[in-house]
Image (tube, protein in one colour):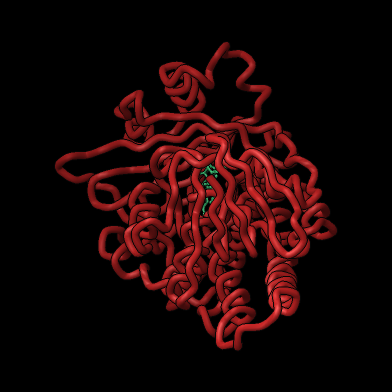
Length: 408
Ligand SMILES: Cc1cc2nc3c(=O)[nH]c(=O)nc-3n(C[C@H](O)[C@H](O)[C@H](O)COP(=O)(O)OP(=O)(O)OC[C@H]3O[C@@H](n4cnc5c(N)ncnc54)[C@H](O)[C@@H]3O)c2cc1C
């Protein structure tokens, strides 16, 4: 079976659904092809910063999410080696507090909220794209079930192992040599933690936890892969992950370690951390003819500044705006003219996103290095001044406005 669609988005994650919703708000129809048989949720929760809330405002879903997730106005930064602790807020780093917004949101709810605003049939599940062919003004996608989809615009939102990015000529993302263990713990009667983002450094790991609504706490522990080698098969075994994290955070206060202790094993997971080398983003083809990439397919980064998902939301808004400018309010015209306008629209998107993505990937890698390093000099510097620098860098990266669906 072959169908034809004006705009096809490969991948129904944060980037794909936001782009589709942005286009829908502008009156443009798109089809999302998702390989899973339902929304694919990995990692339980994520932090969404100011820039993400601006993007969610632009596609009209921020307020319904805000109702369930309190904002976290302060950071509690702790050294698990010396026991030193400091409290930081955007004001203390010179940021503009009134515009500062960070909330921890369940991934499932974020995806369901985006999906819930899309028209019926906008997402086709169990639809894995296996190849892309160039037909001149169109692209032809072959799916694993044997069907084909022909399209005028192809958008790759297919994550870190993106086929579309490969088609554009990007090299594969590289392994950062680090992993993240994450968990979500439920408190059916409500938890008693303050609305704070707690982070602990030291011993070669970075551990943190933060409230995700009134009744759950999300936690994470990033580690260097060399530490993980001591524990065989850890990536497949949540009990080993839990024991490992508890050993690594044995010096932190009991109430913090208790968050991990009481997490159920089916609410713990481990993922290797990959990134695209920043200069590949600077020099690579974000777009070619009528094809482009967004989200992790474009700029996978380490999670040290919590910006992968936030910037996927930004991409979605900017891409929808650029395509809207290219496709709306034009009389029907020859295929070639339309193709040229699409091409220009995608080039405009790439221009707006290239430098921002470069900065995000580089900052994340630098902050990760500072926060996790176990070397003596770095530990000394971190205890004295660098943890404040890291948190300041996070706020700085989050203080960005991608604009709305009509204006940049
Ligand atoms: C440990 C960790 C912690 C993180 N914490 C944060 C955080 O706090 N804040 C934050 O903003 N970000 C965070 N991130 C990053 C964030 O999770 C990602 O940047 C975000 O999920 C990317 O969304 P995406 O839609 O681009 O890709 P994905 O979520 O990977 O979605 C891609 C989709 O494409 C589908 N797909 C793939 N290939 C095909 C194909 N061939 N055909 C059809 N469908 C396909 C997949 O099934 C999937 O549904 C974290 C990441 C990690 C690893």
